[in-house]
Image 1 (tube, helix red, strand yellow):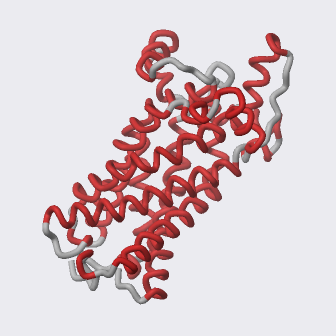
Image 2 (tube, rainbow, N blue to C red; image 1 turned 135 degrees about the horizontal axis):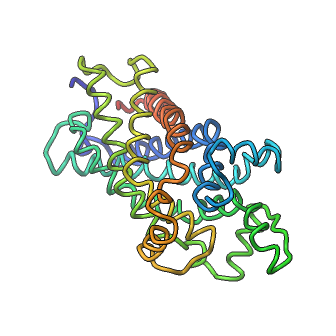
Amino acid sequence: MKSNSQSPENLTYYQRLIVSAIDLTAGSLGGVAVVAVGQPLDTVKVKMQTFPQLYRTSWNCFLRTTHNEGVRGLYAGTVPAIVANVAENSVVFAAYGVCQRIIQNILQKNTVEELTPFENASAGFFAAFFSSLTLCPTELVKCRLQAINEIGLASKNQLGVQCKLGPWSLTKQIIKSEGIPGLYRGFSSTVFREMPGYFFFFGGYEATLCLLNREGRPKQELNPLILLLSGGVGGVSLWLSIYPFDVVKSRIQVENLKTPMFTVMRKIINNEGPRALFKGLGPTLLRTFPTSGALFLTFEYSKWLMHYLSGIPQ
């Protein structure tokens, strides 16, 4: 594939910092696009995962949420969701770029564009560990806010307390009662979700691009629909590969469990059956196709624009 990209050894230290900052900023903008497109269906997903006994179907959950909490209920946790997605995508795309260049050096390839879909998927796998460090606390707060109405209903008889908290007050409450480690409840399940998930995420995206872009044209010259479709395939690949781990993570975070991840998974299977590990998969896939498409479209075009303005070739 023809490219005017410079190899890392040809870039100055200053230029390398700019390239990483471009990846980080483009990932942040992509994270905002994800929340703008997909927050309501993400709320339905979390409710279905953590309170499957309350809702028969995803559509039932959607209707009851809007009836009981209004449209605003579908956007509960939007602020931490933006923080979570900006933090996750900025870090994962910045780390992804670094990991791509490391793999490029190891394999002695001239440019990042010469990496195969499998090699890009491997870069995504390693990059996801770093995003987990920033994602776990913000996603914990988001999940609890999304399910706060159900938490209040569940705890009403024992505690008589209605839980109506904002993201910052909830974060302070968690730190006060559990310390900083309380924000990392479910970290192991987050890592188990993120690393293989991002292997399939970037692998699915790059593999689809290869199929649809046989001429090897630069991404910014492609029809936007190709980027949207490729991003959607990447998102679906991610969730199909790791969804049970996401269910376990949501249970641990919302119910504040200290039980090991695989113990929680085994308990869910024993008490509710294997299908419980796939509760909410429908709205997740419905949400992830357009949101992942919007993520990659925003990332690729904003990245290209910032490279153009900085004068550093992609």
